[in-house]
Length: 119
Image (cartoon, rainbow, N blue to C red; front, side, top):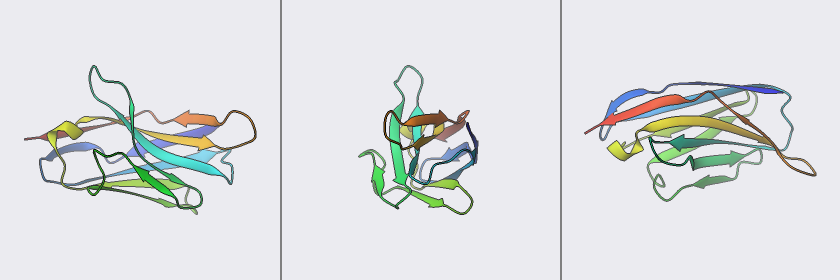
């Protein structure tokens, strides 16, 4: 099992910044991907950014150039630095970890942290 604990959400003004953190513990495979998803009311959960254990990163088009994902592998922690926030970034942000293996990946979710951006 893997536990994910998120922190850093809150309220920001448009143009402001927030930093999210997610600390993972438990059975973490050496090959894994950590990422952030978000879900706004009445919307589906969507991928925001992810980073592999090898350092490869992916960003959705909506956050490219504004958000930066990073990880501290020694601490099993992933960060999401969010700059130039927009009201449409308002959502519950969920940390995700996928243990990669032969066969279906093992996927875990954090409890979510609210990010609210005011205009």
